[in-house]
Image (cartoon, rainbow over the protein chains, first blue to last red):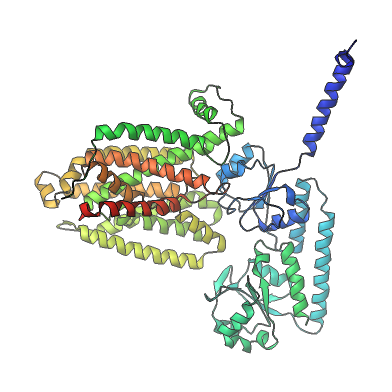
Length: 283
Length: 344
């Protein structure tokens, strides 16, 4: 009896089929993703890539059941630590480092996508499109979602500005019992104020400590208090009752902002937070 | 009187050297990445002789040669520099509290680095930070030294007190800079102050190698002068030692050595203080033996600390300065507790 498989044409066919199958398997092997930026992690999760995340930085929040390794602080990555995760794609902010770690990973054929921290919804959309195209995914659903929120935001804001002038806004980083820092130009706080169509009363760059008296003299219409606990506005008023004499205090426009949503610029969660805030502002 | 057991150098040196070689091999074969042990070691051989014996893939080879080997060598040499400078400072000041930072070099370097990190643009920081750290360390030391010098020689007391004062001043200035710093600069600054060998480059290695050779040879030649100084400054002078010149040379060399060490790796505390004490407990205060053994043990301990730093929290990395102080301080306390009677 002859074995069919050992006849030459069948043999070649068999080899062809198996090699073809392994090629297909390689092509659909899921990516191993490391994200070193909270904003990028959010986008990846929204794109349904949670299960493919093998590592995230300390600022990224990843819900259960996904359990990526924590790779530390994004400016102090461990080259070998990252390589041990065998990542196929690394997404991070442009501040990622040290450069030795990046060089080593590039040698191990990891593809990098470094994204600027988004300051506007348009910037956020660019980042979404960048990440989606690096993973050969469609960004459309997510981009539409951002656009919808952007429209919703603008609609509410237009309604608000119909019966009042542009709001003068102060953004404070509230450090429980250790004073407060005011957000100046170039900060995410500033970006949030712009997103809310307000005027930032700070006339400096970065964050600076600010005294309650100075806040009073600025006469802000709205005070945004960034903290991890929503009691922050109450705490702030209790600590500095003088703030209740500001326009913001009189109209109860001293509002809580979830600081965690602003870790990496205008992210998806920052958009949600902005939508929530416009709701509060229109009251 | 309690008799402290001391070891003869001939007995102690061979196991220490063997231990160090094993430690280096261990350091090259451990890390967050699982590389086969034997091929990793063969890869080192391959790199030196240009042979192709190792079965490692190219990127694994890069892990051994670009990541593990440079930081292993850097940790060894920086440890040796810090420990030897510590031994010299303790000998020269006849003060067990002295460490290389006592003449203001560490705090000056920290201030220099802080200025570069906070005030200079990010693009130039790669070069500017180590340079500013080195210059800062050197300038502060020279300032402290010139304060302490008078017509009748250099006052050790003034040197120590000026060192303390300049450290306090630098800390205040760094405080001011952190107050002005942006979030990123703040984080960079605090990381820098905790030390790391992750960014070891070829230039760093060459620089540190030259330093370790120069410092090692010079201090070894002056071991007898250091021994004489243990008797007291005037006694040393009567023994024919040019105390002033020696002090100046030792201070400048320590400033340069520690300045270079700090500029390549950030601030790594406790090695310079603890290691010489440890060695003194083992072999006694003779600087001819104390200095080389301090270098050996300082290098070994810092390498061990760095191995901990890169594996304990993998895939992220701990700053090595935290490991040296976090483990070094309790260990030192236990040692002091055991030896407290003989130290009175």
